[in-house]
Image (cartoon, rainbow, N blue to C red; front, side, top):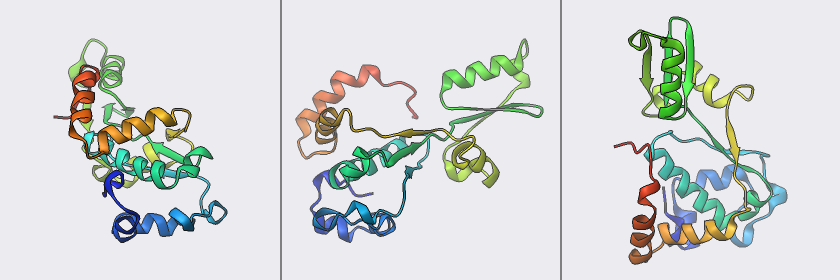
Length: 187
C-alpha cells in the first residue's frame, strides 16, 4: 500500500492498490472529485486485526483523509472490527477482540477448568472460513463496524504528518513519548 503522505497525485493514480479503490468509488480524487458520483453509502475498511492490519488501515485512512476527506466528513468511511480470537467449549463459541476479552471468555466457559476451553488466534482474515468471516465481520446483523469521524481532524492531520511524513525526528519523539501506551503488541 502506498504511503500517500509522501506521494504526488500522479503516483497515486499509478498505484496498483489504489486505482481499483478510486475506480470502485466512482467519485474521483483531486480536481476530478465529485461526491455526487459516489457509488456507495458505506465504505468499510476491512483488514486483519493484528499489527499488519493496523498498518494497512492507517495507510488507507491517510489516503481518505488526504484525498477524499469529504467522505470522512459525510460519514461514509467505516472500520470493520474482525476478532483476534475464537474461544470455544463444546458448541459454545465466543469471538474476542482483545486479550482481556479472550481471558474473560476462557473464565466464563471454562469455569474451574480453563484447560477445557479451546482458543484459536486468527493471524488474519484469510485464516477464517467463509462462515466465520460472514458471522464475525461481514454480516450486518452481527458485525461490529466503527464510523470514522472527522471531529479530531486537526489531531489526525498532525499525527498523520508526524507518523507518515518525511521528517524522522518528530516521528522518533512521538514514538518515545507514546510507546508507554502501546499494549497488545503482536510480536
